[in-house]
Image 1 (cartoon, one colour):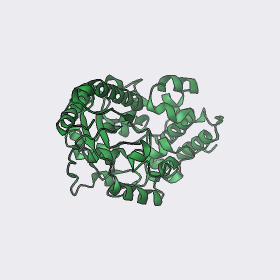
Image 2: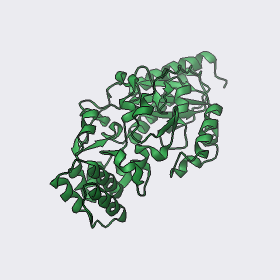
Image 3: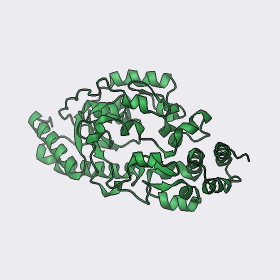
Image 4: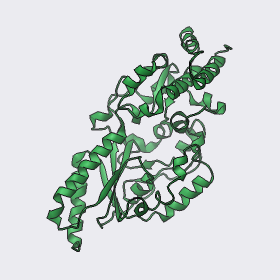
Length: 360
């Protein structure tokens, strides 16, 4: 059966309506031509800016050629979902309290991977059930959200969801950058949307504010310097040159987003799953450093933080304590883990104590 253009156009409109009803703030559609993005991506890899994230360089052309990843893919349905939680402690306030733990706002609630995949699957099931009304061919699909070799920002930009900011995150005039992205790869030859223009202008606020100067040029991040990479993706020792710059950021970093003028338009999430859990928006470094592995797993169950594991968590918190204003309570908390079973933790505890002029 050959799909009639008017049927496909009507279906595309319906898909966007269904997506918004499910909870997505924006739904767009694009083709699979990523030739321009492929050149930039390969140049980024060649510079080694992906660091220890070996998976970024694997999979051949699958990341930049969607049909290589999922056969017969003709279109990508790209979606946004706002995550900024309501009533969360002001980020700037937490960052200025050196004895408190700062956790990137996206990780304060439930794991976004599961939430978005579930909603994307619901949207696909809705499309499948309604397809006969539009006299379209069989619907083939696969859903993704930061879970496979997919150039999410490039696809979202082509689908009209926003533009790539100088910090490399997607920006929207309506929502800033406080949102997650997800994709549906499909064989349906739907009409595509028009990309938006770039609205960063001459602003370099994100570049200037980065604590480790990880944004080495507009639209280019050296992940090896990025605090999000150092606290989440890097599994080994954090280079000493960056430790004092990390401050109290124990999981991720939002500085480039916090300073972006477009984020004054950031939307509060309508999803309960992304509301703050366990008081993580403003919690003591000493408290979270005292968690044993069982407590960590219980508290972080269902959270994106769970995947870094207890050892890496303690490594990060030790750095935060080393950067905190000195007090007997902080010194005692660090001394309690001087003989931690983990070599990685012991190394960072020793560094932290040295920052308080105590040698072990």
